[in-house]
Image (tube, protein in one colour):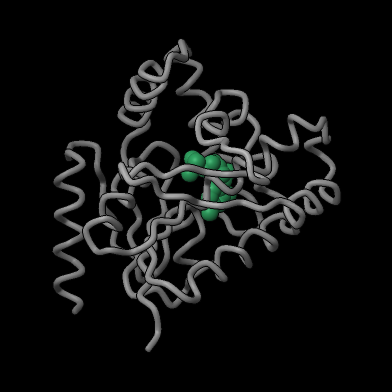
Length: 223
Ligand code: C5P
């Protein structure tokens, strides 16, 4: 029997990872945060001084990097890059500002898409990202496009960063989200777009619980 795949795509800060994690917990599926994979490569490239214009070096970095997701007993998802825990580092403003530059290279994407497809080949998954329903898992049983207004996404990210001890200006966060959306939507390889068979959920005026209930409702309808 084929494994079950749930794909959640959408712009930055729409609440995909929170809802995907909760959904995976409830269903007993594995949660795969594909944004964390692009971030891990960006983090490594920045640390190693690899030029963010050098597609070949970045592609080799993507090939040679071991990215692992580890679930703690407390339910936290940790990200390891070559055996080193980088969960917090990959969310830093520095990585957020540069990740979409790397994600535009088709050769980098090919490497990561393959890794993502492998991860989904032998287990039930909830996977979130930008191109999951369109490129990575086009046969997914359930596809969600989760979005929210730019103002709402900025406010959420602002509070999230504040809680982590970063004091980023609201306007700078807004600009970063808008720029990333622009680059993610307009690149040639695996752009952010709504899959034809995706259900659109606008979470601007919804709580996380309401989004989760909507998705559970959709899954119930499809079983
Ligand atoms: O999901 P998150 O905001 O952490 O993703 C960071 C960046 O990684 C995105 O802005 C996008 O440039 C890239 N990404 C991508 N394809 C995915 C997941 C993330 O291009 N499937």
